[in-house]
Image 1 (cartoon, helix red, strand yellow):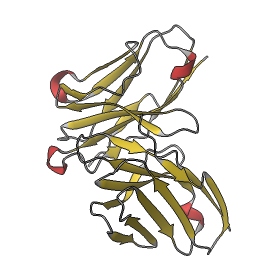
Image 2: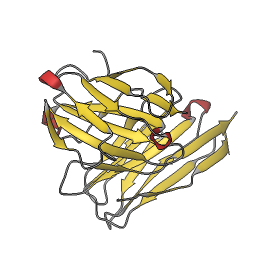
Image 3: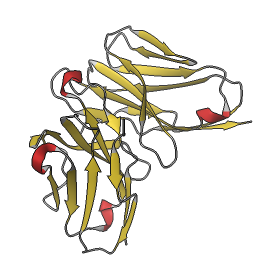
Image 4: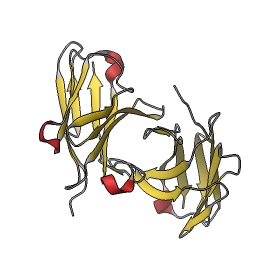
Length: 115
Length: 111
């Protein structure tokens, strides 16, 4: 069974540009989460999808971040326009509904660098 | 926002030594998880704890859910070079699905 995959693995962009990150959860996992880790800090929750619906987006930093999960399969996280403080590693995680979100499987992350 | 205090921030130990790290919170959690992240990979779940006082082992790893429900610790016995990585604790409150993560403990094992 394939794990959570994320694309790209690295992205280097300039301030003001737009970047879109993609996450493909484990097949059949209805829960999908986005997290971010800024260098040296904790992994912070961004938002949670159940299928295509946003269950909790309380962790989204501001309206420059837009997450979508059309069709309830893969998800995208767009940052527009990117700022320097958006640099960090963006993780996606998924879990089956039956687990109640207790066990989350993480992807390898996308390392975003904003110059 | 909620913050977990995880310590130590980093550890440099000799192969064969035991390791201990912990997380504390000002809030009560009903779930504690411990993850390990290796370079280029995402965090991988090591141990999950669901009840206060629970002590769970996974090979050389042992974790406990504190009685106060505000802390948890992870022990690694007889460390080996492949234990190298960043260890994260994560906790979830009774209400809500969100997990709060610690800042991580970077472990280096010297052969």
